[in-house]
Image 1 (cartoon, rainbow, N blue to C red):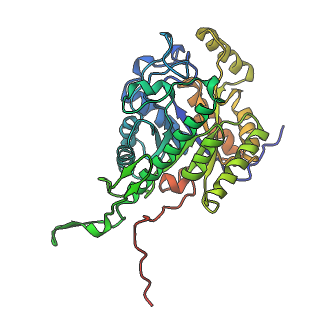
Image 2 (cartoon, rainbow, N blue to C red; image 1 turned 180 degrees about the vertical axis):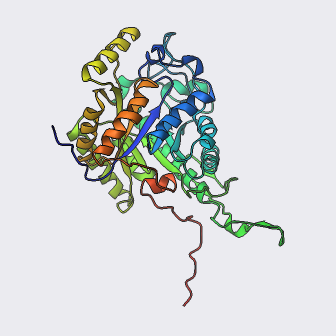
Image 3 (cartoon, one colour; image 1 turned 135 degrees about the horizontal axis):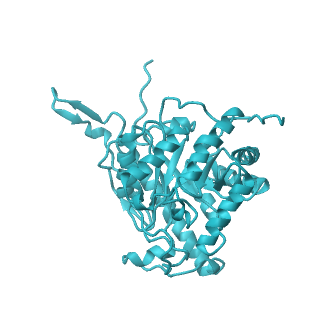
Amino acid sequence: MTPVARSAAPLHLAVALDGAGWHPAAWREPDARPGELFTARYWTDLVAEAEAGLLDFVTIEDSLAPQSTRFDGPDARTDQVRGRLDAVLIASRVAPLTAHIGLIPTATVTHTEPFHVSKAIATLDYVSLGRAGWRAQVSRPAENPHFGRREHAPFAVEDFDRPEVVAAVAELFAEAEDFVEVVRRLWDSWEDDAEIRDAATERFIDREKVHYVDFVGPRFRVRGPSIVPRPPQGQPLVTVLAHATVPYRLGARSADVVHVTPRDHDDALAIVTEIRAEQRDAGRESETVHVFGDVVVFLDESAAAARDRKARLDDLDGTEYASDALVFTGTAAELADLLQDWQRAGLTGYRLRPAALPHDLHAISRELVPELQRRGAFRTEYAAGSLRSRLGLPRPASRYAKPTAVAS
């Protein structure tokens, strides 16, 4: 018998939920539930399954345009899932029906306002009792025609090397950095003890502990304060997905978790090294910034069965499925080997993308998790506490709170 590999440290595990799964033909699987994609029960069932597997958190995909096979605009396909519910509202609906798992909806930064996002995620943190996060996402060109407040020049993937496109992308991510900064300041605008709630003295709040943020920059002018008191976590988790230097820099400067898409061990090592360098340059060397690897997973009892299932879905879709992330076909034990190998390259966790729901989510929670537990690489129960504490992140003090005087 091959000895079971032991992990140097427990790893973190999350799943990314999107429609019927990440393969575009997944909705045609016998166990899929395409008629329920726009119901609360569907999403509640998925998150409950992830919680049963003791996962750290789920992310929920969202965008400001219908899904498309094209990067730069809508396509004409009618044989793939189109349309989705608002991710923040899904998370808010699911939150009271779960107890431990983190809930991280996607909200774009390009066509929204920091004030709106800050109060939505702060509210989610209250509803979930300290389990909220936010995946900050820059909009794709396909979303731009839905909004008319400013002009965005259209571009395609093959245009990324053009100087004007490089400059436009850099500006989008600079805007994203400012956006996250404003959101974080708004979360801090109420001190933790700003609410007094003392009927006897007729004082509900201490106005001296509710602060203007007075952010003034080239892209936003936000006075504040927030209308929502400081969230239970102080700062809900902020995550970003990054594929190259510019978004790596955003994650290193602004996020708690950076999702990346390595192809092998050496690629993972190079990505982690670059992000850590950006983190040092940003003055965050002493802070914990997690780097999670994204992997699309087809999990079955044998590697052949997983390959065959992907091939069958590819035939239904009419093309071979490819992704920005590695597409893994195999068994839970084989995936566990890969995750532990990449962990040795410096990754601290993973966000797995189930190719078909519920099949691959069940395989993650019922096969992969027990395999990792046998190796000492994953928790066997949830510990009490917030999502931040589960990830080893402290609860930060409000930047606007005055230091407490120490009695001599």
